[in-house]
Length: 464
Ligand code: ADP
Image (cartoon, rainbow, N blue to C red):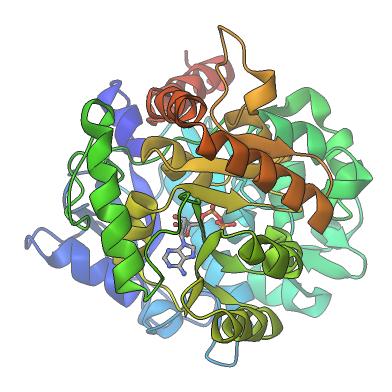
């Protein structure tokens, strides 16, 4: 998004922890330069320095925090190899917030004082709290919630080491059920809260989707809005996607059949039965949030109807085992790849007929949008960003043409009903083609979100 905002004339810079891969990629064109003197110790880090560089590919300006003690670790940025959060996550992300606040106050990058500091998710939640401490700061703060389920909760005792004060550690501050909550800092201390889709902004004001913070959200509902995410439509473009055996666009959508055959053969799935049946795909974290346990319960019935299933994902151990077993029991009809494989995910979107996203909650969701772009019809549950992007076949209008299948209940029966409807539409080539056409014509670029956020920034900006 910041890249799209830059294209609209804003001077955006992206602040990131200096993870090894971040530093490595920024250094590739040799342009990684110091942007501050080295300082420290702070939050356990002995030596900290800000470096500036440009994002390879799009030239976006990036400020990386080089703090080797806290960030120079390979693997998952949030989780230790044990699968639990890194034990020093409170310090690691307090540092991110502290630096964000000081840059916001014009204190760290010489000659640059931003109007708006836009922080994302609990990891950046303390930014607004630290910034509020500095009365002279003109910068306004926006906090975007990407997922309310992840809250950054730590023992209250950690507070003193993070430069948090007694008043902060109260229910009016960022205390939450006897713990510190970084997300709560973002929610209560920021000038504006946004979420990554309009429906999710409404959902988190209620008990079902508020993850215990719905009361906090309701108390700030006059400062809350939802702005739908875009996707990187250069990276996700079937007419230019180098990961695909054959590239295609709406004008030559027939070429998708070649990718489909190639995918079936790559994954060891049977060639088409007669009449042809849809190939359904899942590319996802395998967690309860994603509702894939419901799909797993429905899978035997669906496979018996001639449908083929392609799953790429990783996550919950029981779910990984469940899907792996399914593939063993239904060789040639179900393929399950456990792991994270970006190139394979592109080939799946290029080759499958439909993408299934049965989430229990979904702040925005990206894969249904990739599905639209690749002519891979989305079958989704009516929640969050899925409800905002997918229009059911029976509910299309001239303004919002149908582009997929949407079901309401989080139950195997509801999934099976929706997939049976998709199967019927697939059997009727014209109905299916109409859905593909509508989906491939949706503009999913970041331009809209970038413009909406810029308008929000201007409303908040006292200097405007
Ligand atoms: P969430 O952020 O909740 O996991 P999203 O749909 O917003 O869900 O984003 C998930 C992103 O991760 C998508 O880009 C999806 O393609 C990608 N992804 C998820 N699992 C895998 C995997 N196993 N291999 C490759 N890409 C994956």
